[in-house]
Image 1 (cartoon, rainbow, N blue to C red):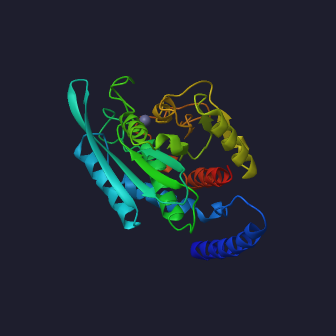
Image 2: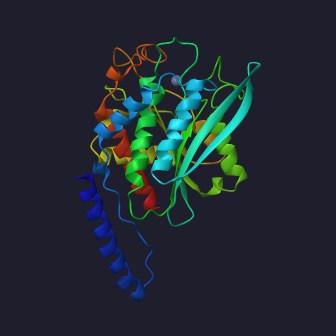
Image 3: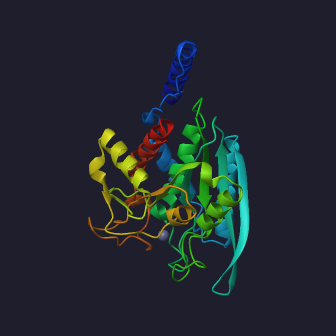
Length: 314
Ligand SMILES: [Zn+2]
């Protein structure tokens, strides 16, 4: 089913490209790319990825579990044939020297632009031995794996996509410039140093997006143009009621990218709990696979594809 859709897309791309060549001979036309069919993303596929990833166990940064998770993600990206970087770095966190590992994989497109899709993969330290973080950070990590698989089969993209699995989002005690958001600060700095930051069209951060009762609370401290784009895409896809602005700012992995001058948005559902407004499963042993659903993963995955399509038309 999936490959049929992709073949159809590929054929339409060839037909469209030929039309473009004809019209180009008559007048200058800016090239447009064939939009990706968002229905190729399956919630079941993403759910399976989350399940497999969460089964690895706790993934606290700097522990053997964290290292094992980074290795697993790097292997999965290499198996897709993508160019993979494991950026290992150390930082002093409350007098403890912690080793972090960012795993990034780059899918090449034509053109200069870059879209970065982010999920942190570490779990919060100090909760309990049973804490597996199915939603925080299993859901976004599994969805990013599934997105990489799908997008890797798109025949032509007008920009590069970096799939960024970031370590050390969770703070040990309280968020500061030395505690928490380690992976995103590291990647934002690296993109800036290497001259790539100016090419970034969008950074799309995914966090806690598997909740069965999906209600995305977009932080106010996201780039306004991307917030508008998320609302537009959710309306087009008939899921606008699942998206609202959070009451205020949220400190998450989008912040270091914004501070480094890149447009960024954070798709986060920060009402993960036993009732609509509650967030009582967050950072507790209750954050288990039974609380997340394939439908929610599918909704967010298709929104990401919708955003990628919008970014093709800029
Ligand atoms: Zn967390």
